[in-house]
Image 1 (tube, rainbow, N blue to C red):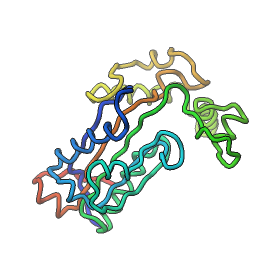
Image 2 (cartoon, rainbow, N blue to C red):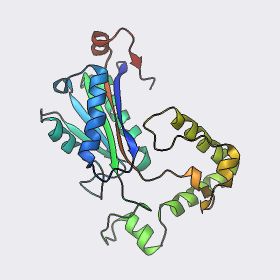
Image 3 (cartoon, helix red, strand yellow):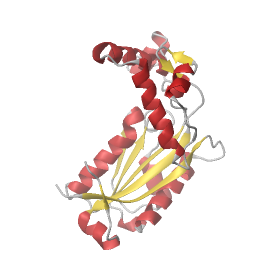
Length: 238
């Protein structure tokens, strides 16, 4: 397997943008990533697109084919990935494997969301084959309740404490202060997190991500291609 470089990145600010559609939001991130990499769209060999939900199946998610159509179709393969909150890392992993394996020299990885307000809902279809329908409509368990149960399971199995959970939120908010595109850029102490409103025991307000609109993109490439563009490439560690 060959080395993989992160050649460029771009991001659209995160927040609520009712005046913009998802393609417009993603285009900002993609254009910025290509410009940062010094790569032309026609040099991209494949696209890995990430969303918490794929629009071809459920709701509001990103369809990478729409991004390609907006950029100008070149015949590149598009891989749409839906994996909830892990979708971005999933798409990066797929892009990394495509480059490392030698299948493509340059891969664009893009993730985007335009999410409705409130709890993340089901697909909207009363379909008994849809596990989200069964969980939310039949059992009455929306997202926060579902994740609260899993968190309780982890606390029981591994001895994770409330302070351990809060420390993750403190770290994440600190990282956000350095990102001009982050929706919230406040610092919170451990006490701030532990004293924030309880949403679904044991999860508190400052430990839960807000539903937001935004997009991010990275350009991944082979070592040979990277060294044609820069003398100091950033290598993907894994």
